[in-house]
Length: 454
Image 1: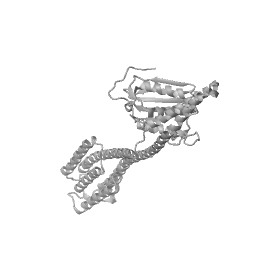
Image 2: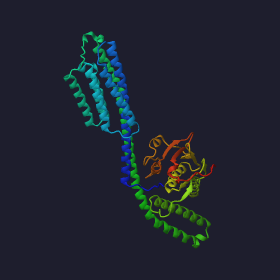
Image 3: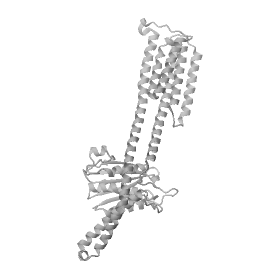
Image 4: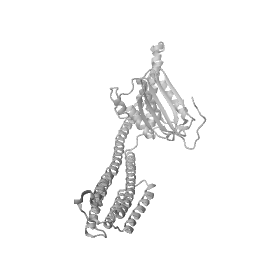
């Protein structure tokens, strides 16, 4: 069962580190997929270029050796595709090895087809660019060193074919034609694949920034939770004293003969009971009063009880409560969830004292998600409030500490694996929607009961 109990700093750091590792792994997988896709394009391009040069330009190439390298590259790419398909962890060493294989294959093909006189020698620059984008600095320099070694090898070791360049012929010269094709190919592939890879890395960095922001917010929750728990302990004694005093006043002569004063005492006792319930809820959520077994109930009963308790302690003129559940389900009654929904209802009541709406619906193919929508007929959210929804101290109420309610609610929703979002209604009012997976509250091994539509 979830609660509002603050997790330890170690737990939070471990969770963020785990999420950061998962994010990095996802980017590594996508980068490897980019390399595999680029390698297929290189294989097709090599076959087409070899055929064109050998048969159209009548430059005799060692077809068996060059097609053998193409076949080896295709087998390596197919093995890479099958190997990485079911894995989630692609490290820098794996990406470095894949790029070095590409550099070696390019070196071998250039050695067999003109060496340093082959205009496609500039394809080394594409490998260097990919290494600089995909890999850490040290690994990128390894790719640079391998490419430089490949170029030096082409100079030192002459291959079976030598290409003659006649730049004076202009576009009619095969070397110039190959140079133009190489330039266009390198530019296009760099723009497409390096741009796509950069977007993957930007997405990863954005997710990591979001995780860091979430960690800061949750540390804020931890501090607030510790302060609230301590305050709840300290408030217990004065609240008990006030309850005794109110009981004594009720039996005193000045109050017994005045029904109006008795009514005021009843209201004071009701509000005092509400304060004590809030304090008890804080202690329950902090784990200080968990001696008894968790209360087992059903989703419908939990919602009905929540609405009944909230309506009895708030001056609401009209609560439009609609519960449309496609079958009930047994759950554990969670005080943290009850407080969160009550807080959202309180905000709606403050904005719209005459009418508040609450709609509960089960969604999903098997009804595995609970959707709670709290609506009001107030002025609605400002654009700035919607843009900063769920951030601490985002409030237009102008009082100290304002804006913490929705911030706390958003973090509680996250702890349940759910989400909280807001929008304005047309033509007036606002709505806050809470979506939770029922698995976060459901009792294991229990089947849903009969439908309880209302």
